[in-house]
Length: 297
Image 1: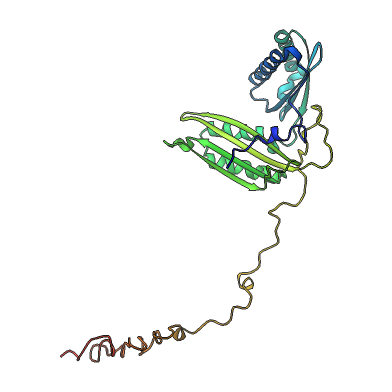
Image 2: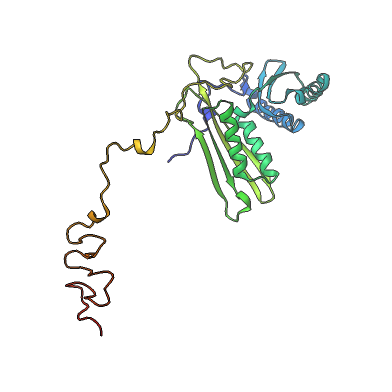
């Protein structure tokens, strides 16, 4: 089986937009490196900000940064002080005017990056990986996800040999381009080594031509409420599943030809007779063809 392609990159230009929106020209490489520096700086500057995505747009003299976060209060700070500090520091790094927009993620349980980071923090706190994965799945399905798959790989539970385990619920159709599937990879640094966490979340299906501009909220954060594959009717009673199965046979009718009746005095049937059960010590012990000879004296 071939390796699975990144679901986000697979849907770029179809239902998902890019994280960097600018034309580079001859300075493409320098701008790309600068984008990476900006992202690393913001994530290191606000490690507990619940940041999922950083979108960067460029004009000739201005850089517009859009931060998608589940905790906008932490990013903005008291009276907007934190944002102003970050803006001034980024101006020194880039030597350009910087504008910062902040979007709140209202349902962090449906964001793959935030779910992965939450599991990573629990693993670093020595919580069981199975418990962390199952809790994340239950939370996502409760909020309205159509499907979720979580995979952890590494020295799980401190095992000597690394392995990977995954749990899933609902449906995650990776080949359906209109399916809004969010994917993210996170890492947990434990005392035994790194553990990789992959999260796929199916939030619904996108119909029509979506707006791919970065100033729009992520598509289908609330998940499309279409019928899931798990919405089946109630199961019938066990007695109603098989139809007319006929009456059960009596115990003495199960022997068939050559075996005779199972119980009673004729236990062996033809060629195997068992003789009277109570007087087996005084009569023929094994019937006609089973041996036993004359009674003991």
